[in-house]
Image 1: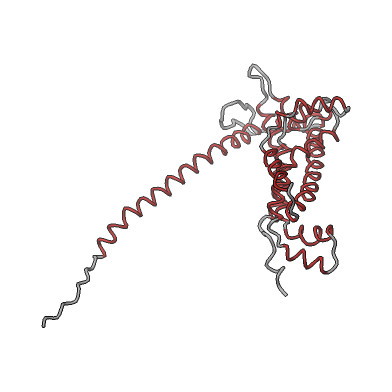
Image 2 (image 1 turned 135 degrees about the horizontal axis):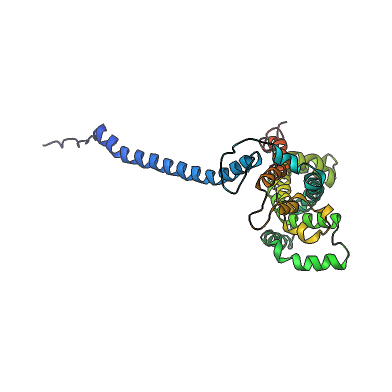
Length: 298
């Protein structure tokens, strides 16, 4: 009786495996190089305007072209550092954007809490309305807003403009604040309510400390959006003493190639400082994440 011989196991040489992986490795390296080149090109699109602004602000013969200055000077900064050109518009911007940001963040927290915690038949339509409002261009509503401000005698009013800036930022603030608030577990609130805390105490002592990074994100994005807003204060404010820096920068532009590019660049650098400082002051809050790890201990 013949016994069947065991099946042979064919072995693949390691050289063949290496040869098969070599084209894959080359394609991966080529893909990484391509991505790096594209990112570098996109970065240059952002860096070159900033480089031009810095060079033009310290150049004695600044022009529209990106050129190295023949001599460094601070005359452009000396020309704009006065009350009428820089200090008053910057103060107006800080007052408008600062108070409007505070109103937006406070109202967003109060509006996002019931949307995040309570269930209602009107909850979904209201959220869809907020989502639609975030994409509504501000230019689409400025004509009726201007007419309303004239009728109620709020045109050329700093408080009125502040409230409208806050109202126009509320849809984005509420939607983003609710997203962060959904990440706070309900079990922590239930434990606080068992201990006798009411709703505002739960919101202030339990929810907000755990979502500090979310509040910081909403604050930064809201302030940045208002700080660069040109259209709203340009329409609603008429007096030159009340114009913010986002509108007064328009005075540096001139037709027939008579724009003072050096002074415009110096003003732009000073105009950018509050946003950069705000981000640097609050960015340390962004790295902490939601401190929920120690909330469940014990």
